[in-house]
Length: 365
Image (cartoon, rainbow, N blue to C red; front, top):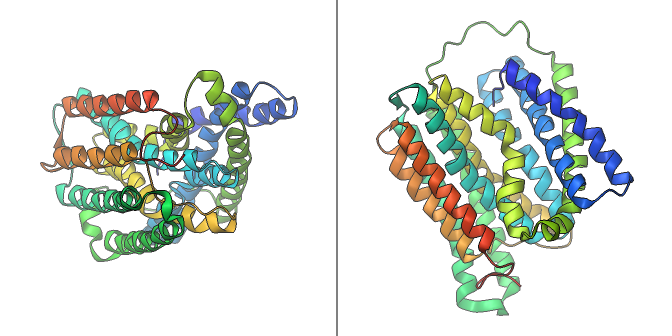
């Protein structure tokens, strides 16, 4: 995740919300204020994590650097989800996973196509790489569909089997994710080469010590802000008349991905569509194939096992997202109207999630 200097400096201005959110917490301020300031605090901290990873990549080479970016690309979302998992907010955790998947593939990609298309009449990208990413997303949709179908067939009578099924599917997903990294970084890396010139190392690159130090500090900061965010989500949802699922699908998902959102759009405006799509779609793949399984495994450490039984509407939303992605990626070209269409689908799904009852049919009570 490459963040421009101007963008990075703009993000740094939001760091003031880190101490503000902590002060409000100890002052027992209204939950809505704590939620809002913690959310704003996470955005620059996630940007710092991306920036430090970018600088660290300058010292370890492109292959390891790509792995670092893949690993830390969704670290903020993972930390938020872990905090919610520790608090027992399973609905928020699963909703944030769904929201991150559809948000990156529809909202971020849509904004990128729109912003780039308004500047360039037609933009092109590598269709084979986009097709591979779409196939991986289809696999993720199947991974979400199977537990939901199993739950619909057996009902709430087999919770142990549902958890065992979720663990088994998580193993398959994370192995596929690892092999996908091998495909992207080793055996078929030419498919993902964005055509950029690679010169000498950046003379302004941070040292290894500074990169690691900033990465650790930002990670700790995200953990603290995430705990404040999660701790205030229930009262905030009630105050705003929203369900926890909507908060997870829309609000939390956008917060965790904010830095990457702006990066993908800026790359599109520079006509670097391969990079833009790589950020947007790659993040969705990481959420589905890496973050979701990790959360399932981590849930056992918290003593409250997480399953992959998503509500029927969440599954349908992901399947629809994959279908729309396949349609726009098949020709290797994009324009502003395709961006509008992606945004329209995201908006319609967001409206539907807003009106979705707290415990929809087919979901867990």
